[in-house]
Length: 312
Image (tube, rainbow, N blue to C red; front, side, top):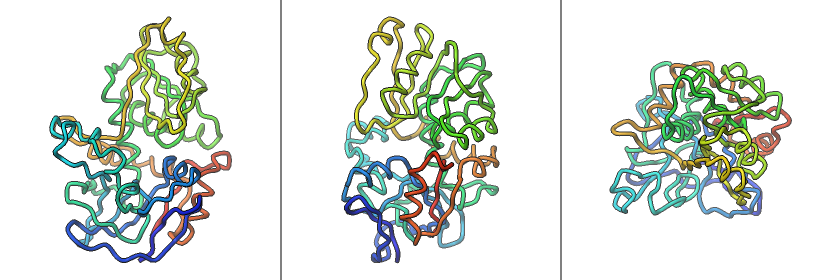
């Protein structure tokens, strides 16, 4: 079968053996390109695995599914206490990094990874379950109220996903969006633009020092900054403002479960409740053979890309 792999700072479509062994075969229908995928390619990570952790498809019986694309060990201290997003395997548990991912015609995963989709959610759109779950996991760490004022810095897929979760329930949600396509999507989701004044919570989704400084400026004294971005290159902490305002910083990584409910299942339900989201967030769809073009498009936010999806 065909699969997308990274070598020498380029993505290549290569022929690999079809997946076999224990697990559930999923016929991939959509695989989103994440900012992490772009970073790994640009940084020259020569991963031995097929790329892709934002994945949805169909089971052999035709049922539409998304994936929770991680394989935690299940026996380390973090897994045993229920926080499997913090499994000691770290990035090695992630499909598309430590295991063959979903930018391929098929993927094989343990049954625990399967997310059955509501009837009105298509597999072609359900690669959005993963970024929505990232946002849902972080936001449930906050003591949000209907009266809370929330700002979001960064309007990529995760920032817009956070806005989509918040806007039906929180009265004030403003997002700092750099590009016209992001601004239009944010407004159609129901968020305001150009945050100003003071906020109870600021969600940082851009992953750089300037964004973190903006987040601190937007916080009222005693507010909380939620870190939803991935900080690949490190950042400078605006320590003076953080200290003077006695700000709280809450970090979040991936997703797991709250009680018996997984973040990915909450995300799948959100897609069912907000069927307009795929049309707002997925800006480009390309065939698997066009992976190199798709990555180039995804890297060019100024040209209007939000979520670029490969469709095997």
